[in-house]
Amino acid sequence: LLDKIIRMEKVEVVSHLAASISHEVRNPLTTTRGFLQLLNESKAIPEVEKSYLTVAMQELDQAERIIRDYLTFAKPAPEEIESLNLKKEIERTINIIVPLANMNIVELSSELESCYIKGNAGLFQQGLVNLLKNGIEAMPSGGTLSIVGTVEKTLAKVSITDNGVGMTDLQIKRLGEPYFSTKEIRGTGLGMMVAFRIIESMNGTIKVESEPGKGTRITLSFPLNTSG
Ligand code: ADP
Ligand code: MG
View 1 (cartoon, rainbow, N blue to C red):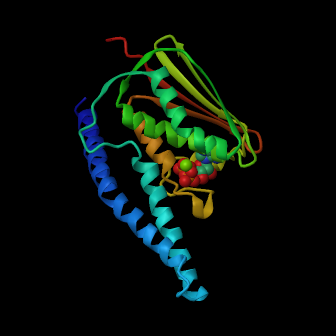
View 2 (cartoon, rainbow, N blue to C red):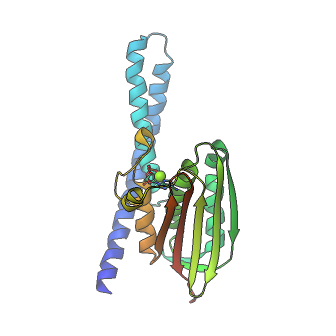
């Protein structure tokens, strides 16, 4: 038990720190990106030098992606553990991901049973967004992302299924390893690590089933919160 408390405190400290950093760092990044864009449109700057600007903007975009995978929903306030209506939280998260799905011609389908689990809403959404994003990104020429939530005995189960590129056994083994990404410059390799940590901090488990060329199903299981 003591072990668990210490671990939970660590998660709290880390997420608190992370949230502060995100708030402080995001604004200057955005401002800098804006000024670089302005310079890029200037007629006084030779094309060769504009290529430096392009690289600088790409690097800022990567920094923004890293912050997003880590900290989209983090709040500087201490993370509160509450009773979460799983159906409601998943629906909110799906709404956040709609624009990305549309951009990739991915249809979102959901079938959700109502139930309660314990956790922090912001963290849960961050974890889920990272998983949904990966599902969408796994289908570069479109497809369907299906999210199903059911209650099985004492567990709430959430499955996220895509019919995308899938993964080899070796790739499945490396999931959650920091900086493991097959997306070259567009990947951070942080999304899964963050999702795994959040789900584990909620006493949840993760099962990954995947086949190259066919698709991936990720199934999360959480203990139901029966204490109201
Ligand atoms: P990123 O998305 O930035 O690459 P992640 O940590 O989110 O980093 O994911 C790591 C890697 O896991 C991805 O690059 C991809 O190779 C693999 N992956 C994760 N989810 C899926 C999925 N649904 N389908 C196929 N590959 C996936
Ligand atoms: Mg990702």
